[in-house]
Image (cartoon, rainbow, N blue to C red; front, side, top):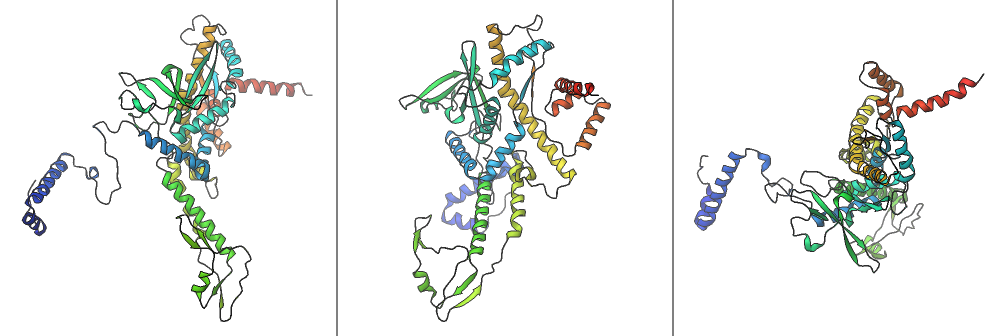
Length: 471
């Protein structure tokens, strides 16, 4: 690095405060060394950059702050209640990922054994939820919705003799006592082992006397479903974390536009008064949002104003931006969908002016995202629940494993709802071409549409019987 001659400012500083001049020279030298070692301009924060949090260690920030997580949950739940766009995002995501619920399909080689499993599973699944308030499809919806909105959700596998239940637990109640948070082996309701694996969860519940009590649940009896964003995360990040400000600003813009239009239709004329100050002084006062007094004027459609001598009337015709409202909202809605796999058309429920090609392209990307979400939900939540219940049936003798299937009796699939076809003629023809080319099977296509191929064949045979008997 070559030194440059000091400018007038540096010479003046050296004259007034030599120590200050020396510290500035050292800072410039250190920055020059770092720039040579790490030659990335983006590694340095300038005055025009937004603030970003620096890592607490060489490995980065280990975990979401407990206080921030609670505040983000509260903020997300408020948006779900009050913001139509936030609620729509959660609704559309649940509709596409869960739909009417993922269905179990045992996939062992023994068809009779598969049917025995279904005969036990079907009556149990709709009473699986401990409180009895939700059927299995509702339970799936609420678990996935909580996962998105709150960042994480859990459930306890409750054994009751040979029977068992699933107790859903909101992320709020998975929390450690403040006294143990300084222990590096505890992370917000989780006790970690030596290798970083979660060994125990702490669940907070209210006792009959109103006091909070803690229950420690072994990890083997707990299903935890976090929305992880980095490998060091133990707790999940709410879906709305990067969207809070945008959602609130869009809601305020919508509200301001509606209020503006209400004022326009109520005010047909503007009255020019000779003594405006006196007219304003006669208006009633009220307290505004800043707890300050301000003058108010009640407006309503069809108002009639009475003029004093010398006053004039002018038609009220304000410039309006109503033509740009729809386009502006759609532009911003595109940013909302980026975080959750939703296209603007899906989020706004508006498909006007959309071609088949653009609609298909958007649906393909959205479906890919939703398929990944379905796989994760099935593997983390439903698979654990099924294997736990299956093992209890086997241990209790209600289900006998056929000889030779001791290591494979648990094989199964979870079948999600199929996605609707934009153009059935084109897309079904393409699927049949895949079969003819050896790139797919009828079973694959049936599963992609949310069906089991053998069930479709059985239903088809039943449908054909009456037709074959008709004259």
